[in-house]
Length: 492
Image (cartoon, helix red, strand yellow):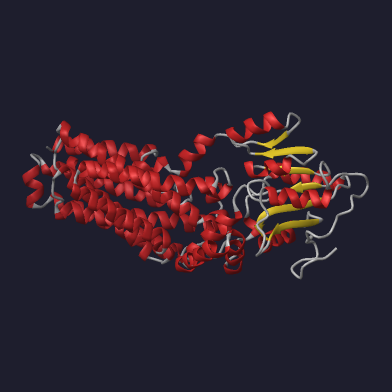
């Protein structure tokens, strides 16, 4: 048996494997089977996150020399960490059961040999492996031919998950299927009556909704505030604002999908974010690449229906959000300034859509309030980190001991927003818009309570990862919002 220098476990194509103890070997696919993800896409994402230009330079290699050389070059540039892959527990259980019964288990994958060896070394569960090299892409019929050469027809059991595995299953004794989609399920049922489904994806629609972070759309309610502040309540204005709300919601979801794709490593290392659909392997990574541009196209179409100026604001929002996801969120303090601006852009969009100018009082109040919310978001992450005893935030420019200063800045910014509101109440502008501006002083008291409530909730570790989402689901915050609305109403 000839082996490469890379690992003593690699079985080469010009050798034959002897079946011991009378048991047929179990062959396991990697991508989508042993791991609920795609190692090639993860490698691409790793390179895109670190050096996008390097990836595009490798694309020409794929065009000139084929997919096998492309995979090999990518593996030389970056390797995902096998320790944080979302492994399929049903497959691992079958592997361990087979090994305990004396069955030889082999990994057979179209992934590059470097990636396959890393997985083998991490798990320590395989007696050998077959993988792609610089000159050979081990997929489909190529994998089937190699396995037949090694073990013979009906000389092995095979676990797979994709239509590319059909040629392999054609020569396997026992067919094991993992997370089949509707098309694969139908074809497997027709061709292999005795097949076994090891695991199935459940709550798929829920996973897509979660990946799009539909619950985050609540932030886009900010688009309606300029019209409310300007006392505009016409049906035409609000129908336009509803289009703008939908445009911003689809745009935000598009960026959230890209953000989660690029943040796989840091999300998997996070106590709470590791359950996000892409990080947990609940949704194929390729679907994220398809959904993101579709949602963006829908967003731009709705934005153009509002107005050209609104569309320009929307494009600016997308550009800043994308830049934040790629670069800014890794830079301490610059990230919270970017978050503050993202909140503010929603107000600008609402102002443009409703054709109502933002007053300098409203802009000043919003700036400090949004800075407060952005700092609360970071303080919440640091509080969780400190409680867990970790020193730093993966993918962020903060340390756990930064919590004190971040919380102090949040408190300062929150109460400055109350000060701006108080100055507005006593200003000429406030007197012109309200018949009883003195009643607005009660709003200042409500704001003082609410800012303190959020600070205390964050300090106790009970804050949601997004304070805006917390505000619209928290009973006390909703009561404050109702009180503010009533105060404004009785002040008119």
